[in-house]
Length: 478
Image (tube, rainbow, N blue to C red):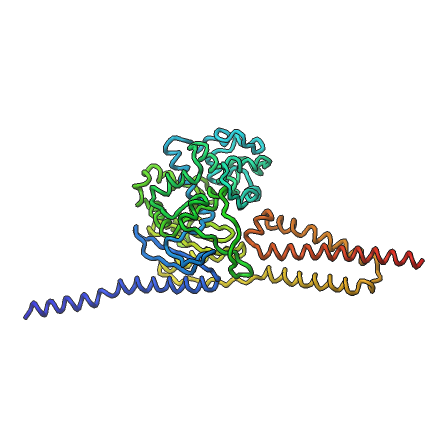
C-alpha cells in the first residue's frame, strides 16, 4: 500500500508545482501581446513583426496586420525595411574585411576612392571616422544624398561623388555628427575592395552565412524575398507609400529583413551564431570605438549605452519614409528583441523607442509606462493657417474694389509674398533637413506647407494687383 500512496503523493506534488513556471511564462506572453495590441491599434500601424530571443532561442513571436501594396498578412518571414539598422550590417562587413586584412581602420578614404573630394579632408578621414560618424561630414550634408529613391543600380562611388562639393564642418575625429554620408562612403569602399555590388557582397558574405534567407540589400532581391513598401502617415493615418526603394541607400538605410532573420542576427550578437563568423570577427565587431560620453558609445554601426538599471544595452534604431524598426540586445540578461513596423512619420518616431522600453520592462517583470497617443498638432496648426490665408485671399478677390489704402495693400502684398517665398527654406533650415527629406518623412506637413506658401504668394500678387489698379484709377481721376 505504501508504494501507491507514495506515487499518488508524488503525482499531486508534481501537479501542484508544474503550473507555476508555465503560468509565469504565459502571463508574461499575455502581457506582451496585450501591450503590443494596444500600441499598434493606438498608433494605427498596418503591419508589424516582433521577435524576442532569450538564452539562445526565440521565446516570443508576434505578427500583426498586413503589408503595403498587396496587403498580405504579416508573418515572421515578411521582410521590412530596417532603416539605419542597415548600418549595423555594413559595420559587420567592415569588421569581417578588417579581420581578413583587406582594410584597416586607419586607412584613409583617399586610399580607396581617389576621385572623391571632401574639401581636402579625404586624405585625413579614416575608416574609423566613417564608422563612428566623426568624419566631420554634417547630418544635413548626409541627408542631401539620402532617400533619393534611386532605383537604378549605380556604383556607390558615383553616388558618393555627389558629396564632392561638401566640406567637413569639423576636423576628422573631433565631433560625432550622425550622417548617412559616412556609411554611403563605406558601402562604396566595400564595392571597390571586393569588385562586387554592395548587394551581392552582403548576400554572399553576410546574409548567406547567417542563413538570413529573407534579407536583401538591393531592390531586385528585396522584392524576390517578399518585401513590399509600407505606409506613410498623413495626420496619423496610414497611406500606402509611393516612395521608391533606394538602391544607393542600402549601406545606411534600405536593407530589408524579416523578424525571423533578425533573430539570427541577435544570436550573432550573443556569440551563439559563431559558426558563420570567427570569434576574432565578433570580438572586433562588438568593440566600442568612440565615446560620446561616459555611458554612450558608437562602434561598428552599433550603439552601446546603458539602461536605467545600469545594464549595458547594444542597439540601433532605423527609419525610412514608410517603416520604423528597433533592434537591441542586453548582454547581462542574454536576451534581445527586434521590432519591425511598416508605417512612419518624423513626428511619430519617438513612440517606438517607448515601445521598446515597454517590452524591456515587461520582460524584466516591471510595469510598462503607457505610451502617449500621437496627436497631429503641427498639421492642424498648418491647416488653420491654410484656411485663414485662403479666406483672406477670397476676401481680397471679392472686395478688391473696396480697399482704398494703397500703401497698406502694397505692404500686405509684400509681406505675404515674402513669407510665402521663404516659408519652405525656413522650414528646411529649422528642421535641419533638405526639403526632399521633409517631403519623404512628413508628407502631410510638406503638402500643407507648400499649399500655404502658394496661397501666400497668390495673396501677395492679388495685393500688388489691387495696389496697381488703385494707383491707375487715382491717376485717371486726376
